[in-house]
Amino acid sequence: MSAQKSNNLIKLMAGVAVSAVFLYLAFGSIDLGQMKHSFQTANYWLFIPSALCWIVAHWLRSIRWRLFFKPIRSISIRRLFSATMIGYMGNTVLPAHLGEFFRANVVGNREGIPTSSVLATLLLERIIDVLSLLVIMVAAVLIYPFPDWVTKSGYIMFALILGLFIFLILLKQQNRWTMGLVQWGLGLLPKPIAGKLKEILYAFINGINGLQNKVDYLRMFALSIAIWFSYWAGLHILFYSFDFVSIYGVSTISSVVLLVITTISVIVPSSPGYVGTYHYLCQLSLELFGVPLSAGLSYAIVAHGISTLPTAFVGFVFAWKEGMTRLKSGDD
Image 1 (tube, one colour):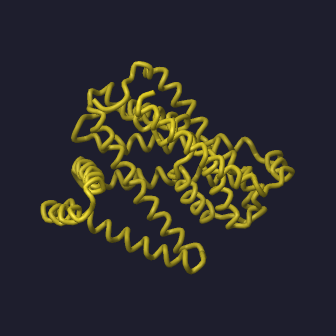
Image 2 (image 1 turned 90 degrees about the vertical axis):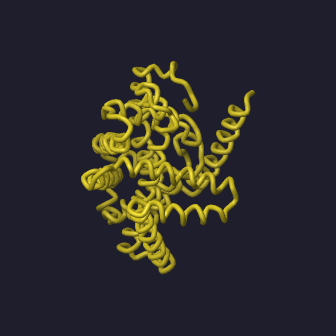
Image 3 (image 1 turned 30 degrees about the horizontal axis):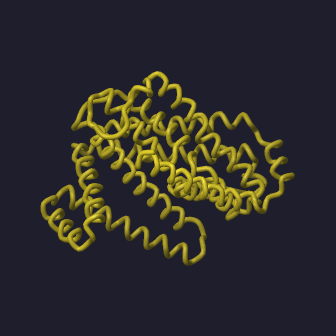
């Protein structure tokens, strides 16, 4: 067995172990009768618009991704949507977000772009997603009456976001001075860490350099809002499917908090498809708003299935059309 395959197997086994623990926590204190009642009384027709919200979010993500390729090449949204869906399909069946390499390969091989360049745009996308998530998190903390320690954490996060925003402005407007300061700071860190941070930073710089005018920035900002709104809508619609609004009084802020925490659950290393981590953290999020653990787990099972299965199916169709068996792995 090669070192790479051995490493992937270790990641898979570790992910499965993490998922097993979280599944045990999720199912450890539930009432099967209450879960059954939640499924029996759910409005299944609302599953359809909820699933469509996730597909729309991925389509919008493809449009935003196209902006990052402007200095490299003009690529059709259809090609980028195909790659995006294949990538998410890969993340559903493979550990450690390996689907991102499928995504990069589809664009790189079909458009003649080095895979490393495509991965740089994906890195930029992830940075923007994290920034957007932090903004949403801060907004939720400021609006919802969380405990004091959570609110104080929100203020700290807001200060960090503001500082990062100022840094990005300086990076764009005063690149030489800012990079000199960054190089000095990186020199204080161990070489492996400094090298990784430098790689991330240069990928981000190349990405924002591709945004050539104010219109591009406005488009990126508007698309980011639309993407997260679509994700939120997909979760919020399911509140009505399970009648949580009238029974437990959940609100818009409830689904915003749920969006933030379930997104974090995707980041936690686990088995393919984020099984276990998503279910448990979704369950705990709903409990904050008075939803019993059993009903919350029923919701989590449906939300997880809706956010992954239709996407995986569409991704599989695109992968078959793209001839994934002919795609190479690794860098060009």
